[in-house]
Image 1: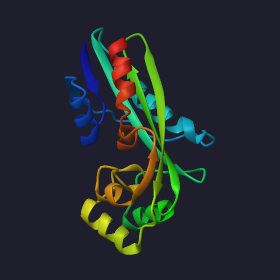
Image 2: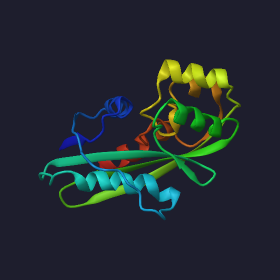
Image 3: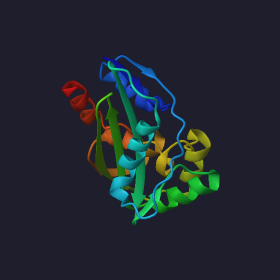
Image 4: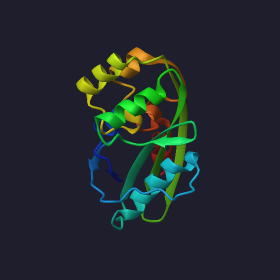
Length: 184
């Protein structure tokens, strides 16, 4: 079985290596646009499956893994920030509150696609303007949903409580990936 990981995320690559799988990284060009009335809890799975379906036809021995992570608070999705001001706004929104992180995965073979979503709740302490500026300047979270990475300084210094998988928040629900790949 040849595993193909369709992600440029260094975190997803690192997690898949840590699970003990050999794989090849592939690129998918896909415009990630959500339908207007999609329910937030379905958004990550929708985007993950959209990417999987945009990939070329698989060979008999290939397995494709796609993933997408969505951060949501107060019935609003926080995607990747467009710029520094957008990142600051997102982090102010998350400060002192609990939000949800949804990561959807799709594992596709020649004959079927399995898509699942895992969710985790994350509660932040209050984050000062100085801390927001420090984090953005030093960690440049412009490739991260919600403008933060749990494995970085902000996650270490400001996450008060979480419920759910650390790895789901990091961007790959490793327990689901492992389970599905073992079944295949």
